[in-house]
Image (cartoon, rainbow, N blue to C red; front, side, top):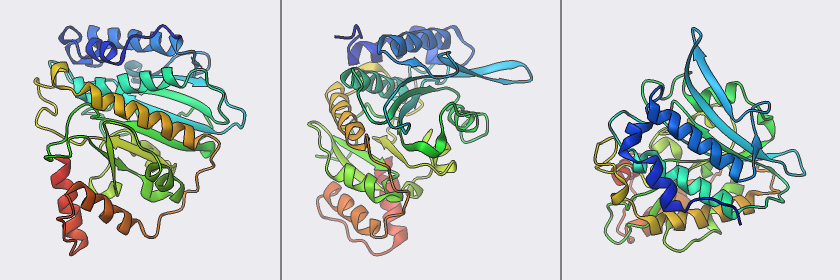
Amino acid sequence: MLSIPSLGEVCRFLSDPALDGRFPGSAGHEQARKYLTDKLERLGFAPLFSGKWGQPMARNQEVLGENLGGIKAGSSGRTLLVGAHYDHFQGIPGADDNAAALAILIETCRLLDPWHGSHNLVLCFFDLEESPHYLTGSMGSVYFTKHCPIDLDKLDCAIVLDLCGHDTSIPGREDALFVLGAEYSPDLVQVIQSTESPGVSTYMARNDRIGDMSDHHAFRLAGRPFLFLSCGWWKHYHQPTDTFDRLNLAKMEGIVGLLREIVLKLDGLVVRPTPVQDFGRIEAESLKRLLGGQLSLVSEDSVTEVIRRLWR
């Protein structure tokens, strides 16, 4: 058995106020970087970046941040990637954003060890996701795709997690997890529809209803299939109150089980990057389940408004 701290222990460490938000360039950010690098090694990954764990990102010879990554080789030469960002804002613990997702990824990869897959398995911890880098060329995941250590043409799916530790605010649907990006491939829809895990329920929606809210942005721009898993925003988003004690660890365990099954089902599958023609029906069914069948879909605008409202 791998010597890895528990899901809660990992999340508690990364959201400790002593790390002061894991702000790039700070001592807390350096602590988080070393901690996550150690977990990559303990999980049995090989360094992803030409024998190194880190991919420094510099501007005018000043290092702004550093992506971290590891790889476990498969037999086919094709790749699956799971990832989340590890930076945050100074003065904010960042438990939900994004220590919870990091802990989920580490626990999932622990359960996937040893890896005997057809696909390579890549685990990435992206840096510089937050403002002022958000959705710019200096965003860590964008830099990753532009200086990619793997063959992007053989990346069958990038699964990105963000804001995965809290209950949603819909009464009776606190276990909701939004899944965006499946609309780009019928294979992804089939995998999500056929995968369940105790403690969490998935609801699919089109990514453009919300827009690129995290590192899946880079993979969409690169034209690669992706899935974005998130519980949406909540009142503690980007607030000093985003603390460990407010997380739902049982729901996070459910997401671990879900993610593990998704990875196993995608392994060996060459994902077809073909838009799903009837995704509107799939999306409507998800919304009706989410709202207990009380939704009347009258227009595209109304669907977008409902999803944006639920996201908050």
